[in-house]
Image 1: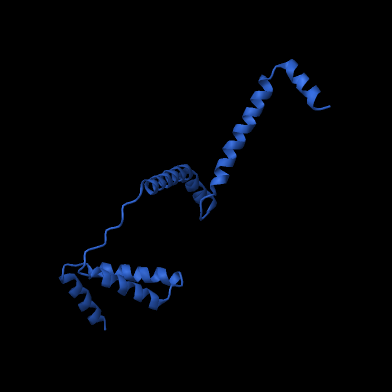
Image 2: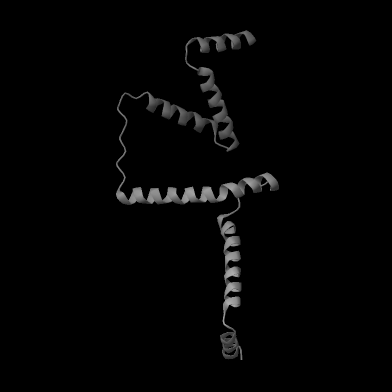
Length: 144
């Protein structure tokens, strides 16, 4: 039986195509789908369907062009995604390394800290820069 496996490996290498790589990736895909509880029969049906599509002699269908609104929506979504990735990447790397976290922190948490610091700083700046006499008048009028 070991001899058969060795003969198979040699035969796949002689053809020039890297069939071993294809078989390895199919095994890897099978393992992933099993971990996701995807049934084996459904996996084989999907592979057969797309293998048949790949063998078709008909030209590929050309997708319809996107409308201007669809293009701008997609561009805006990608712009926001780019911003989220650039904002979260440095912090997420540190958190994942030092706290053994598996996921990045939520975006609202990342904005809450700087917004709180800015709000407190602005409050202190207004309190310090407010003219002395008008502060007394403000307290006298509003806190009686």
